[in-house]
Amino acid sequence: MNAFLRRWRDDRGAASTQLVLVVPVLLLLALLIVQFALVWHARHIAQYAAERALAAARIKDATAADGRAQARRSLAALSSRILTAPSVAVDRTAAHTTVRVGGAVMAIVPGLTLHASGTASGPTERITTPAGDRS
Image: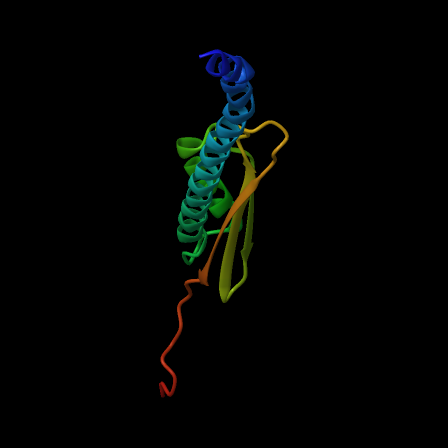
């Protein structure tokens, strides 16, 4: 019995030490999971805003400013806190329109700065005549 008591005294505090070491690691792991889920969500928001802006900017009489305005409206409706400091770039030519939306993702883990972006591109609508038309 004396040996059992001596062994029991040697292990005192081991559970507290293990708890102090393991809990912060588990907490950091949980925060990282939430942070990367937010990055995934922010990418979807940026992609959606880019696609909506492309739809607005590529129509026949639209301008790049129309696309930027639509992207800003989409971002305001969806990501007031998730996608911070968003940027919208619309490149519209006579043949092709490209929209890029990006921004920083809300930080859950201190000191970790992540970015999300979305890109959409497609042909600019224009009126054409069929090839070989003889008038």
